[in-house]
Amino acid sequence: MMLRRSFLTLPMVGAAQLTRAQSVRFPNYKLSIRVEHLFPRLPLEEQIRKVTEARYHAFEFGDWRAHEPANITKLKNQLGLQCACIVGNKGVNPPGMTLVDPKDRAGFLAEIKASAEAAMRYETKRMVVLTGNELPGVPRQVQHRSIVEGLKAAHDIVAPRGITMILEILNTLVNHKGYYLNHSAEAFDIVREVDGPYLKILFDIYHVQIMEGNLIQTIMNNTQAIGHFHVADVPGRHEPGTGEIDYGNVFKSISKAGFRDYVAMEYDPSRDALETLREVKKLYEASA
Image 1 (cartoon, rainbow, N blue to C red):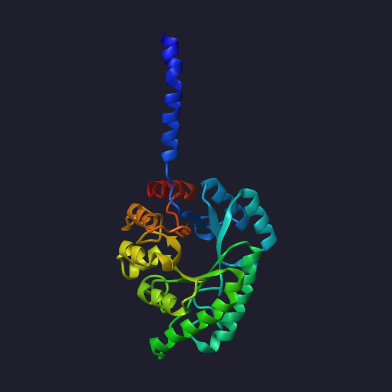
Image 2 (image 1 turned 120 degrees about the vertical axis):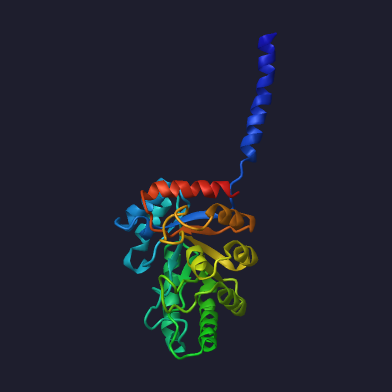
């Protein structure tokens, strides 16, 4: 009799375990690593292998021109990773290819075309775009108009290839003095004015916290215009938990807002990088 009761209860226990397993939820957004920051002394191929070791979904890096896309793509596919994005117009204030100066328009568009083609070779659907530094003596509304016009023209280049430009906000108080696009409100205005599906904002949480704070409300109000996040704490640009940002709540807001793309680690670890990445992943898993 005891044996029969034990046997009959087994399916019920199994069903309960299955129900609990099925009820486990994970966030819809995915995790990426900007590998130069986390693993600065390694070659790119080894940096990418570290992403697998950390059990993250994707990697990203800056200078696509310095590498052979066939090699990187082969490696990422072997490891089951995604390339989250590459950088389009080279840097924060790239000479001859900024958005703020109409004289740079031809150079900017040529670089966007080259980067869009490179994105296809690297099998990624996103490229970072930067405005360049503010032009001294030129009214901001004139520079704003140049940015919008340049991005509209660039949209015509990337749209047929299915590549999304992610326009980055940077702080000008600590790291990038003189950079034009330093507040989120103007960034979201630019997205609305360009009015195309292949332009979004790269919402760098570290930079926005320095310039304006109010992170969660800004994210919740503008999720549809955000295509990518970067993560670092303030001050110091180290891993979450070292500064003033409550990343547990920020990640929950990103999940609650229904964001489905990449949240990328772009911090300078204050201790073992893999250990910090494991701790961040716990925040990610708890944010569902």
